[in-house]
Length: 128
Image (tube, rainbow, N blue to C red; front, side):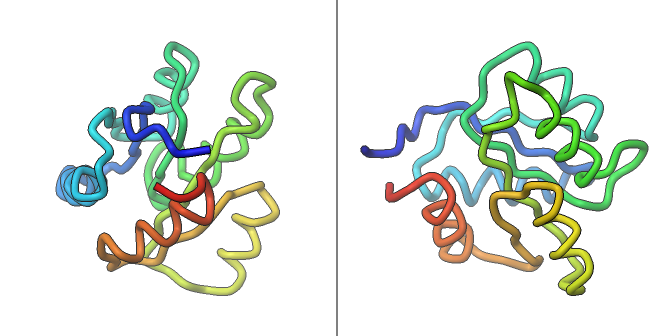
């Protein structure tokens, strides 16, 4: 089954520049239906209001971190199956393990480019 490039994607980062970078990379890959949130709480509110096909979230945010957001998503009956990609500047093994234990679909270490994002997305949602 082909991936619907019009599916809503939610990107979550407390840094406006990073939101813009990820939005531009997604656009390069053909995704045009991109929404954004500046923190985990805002993301959770949007996820409960509208159906998204994918979440790409930064790890380090306040007050709710990406890992806390991931745990909330996985604990929510309506959201738990949603593909969730974590973005972080840290590649520490314990972080990767913590994210995997929390149920992350995939993990991207910054900095990254469109090719890396496409590889991670393909692993999570299939070819597009």
